[in-house]
Length: 466
Image (tube, rainbow, N blue to C red; front, side, top):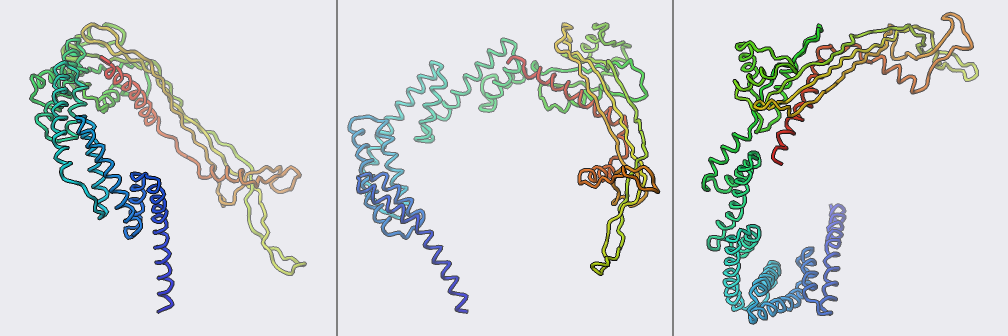
């Protein structure tokens, strides 16, 4: 039992010594600084020493002596500023002294801090706050809002709840935001106007007519987009539905200023009014559809080109080798040994590919003027490859190689035993054997094209009024 306790006591002792080492180091540093008359810096060193070891007597004594000297220096600066009616210097000198006093006393070190200093501080603070308050009001009246906000923030940091500073500080933000919103509204930059009015609304929803201005700005900034059916005059056995993909991507854009008209609503109006919406043809029809649905923008498009290369599989019979173990008696060593042998085999290698491509053009049109706002052509392609080996024997032991005759040896016979060659064979043995369905590849293409189209429309919306 005693033998197990001794190592534990030794570990505890080592731990205590390691903990005390930084404390002693900071204490030594504090003594040097104190001897040089740098009591502020010495106090910091002693506090760091006590942070490592609260029981360090030398550090506690040193902090009490240097701490009092440092506090007296701070208070002297405060008193001089107070006597010279330098109210800002007086306030901040006292606050520094007070914070230092709190930091030291938190370590259970008592310092002398005469109470009359606080009375002088409160007098100077009141005068300084009155001055800041008056300056802040003057800045606010002169519409120097940033300067006013800076002063009101300082007042709040010195004395929270001082007079109506909280409200004035808020007004220094509200007024410039409201006026900026009005300027943007008059310039018909409704998206920017909404941003400013929304800032005001967040600070004070009852301020003047901000609720109405915010609502109207949002309504006018919102772009209602009617997505017309994308034209497809190409005859392919595979179905495409670009319109649905585009509508889905635009709806997922999470942009509060873009509203996509319901696809069923669009189709219903086109059918009822018997419109023929040929891309690049009669723009009047598209504009009438947009007008009937209350759309500000019309999105039209067409499939320009599409190519499909169906799966084309090829197969080749390949020569190779299958390894096996043969037991051979070694007369010299008088024992049986396992020898790796290779038998000639044939295996089948399959490979092929398929691909699809699409080329799509779109236009974003102003429903009122017929102006083309955006236009672009997107071309995307998707390719799929299949490559694998089929072998009826022990696939784990299959190696690539060449041979002339299956039953006779030839000098050109080779087994490809290198790691890289074996890895190629193993990868093909477990290689992909099925082609992706063409319809699935078309879905991916339409998705990528719709994403690119949506990015351009969203970017156009976000750049308005910038």
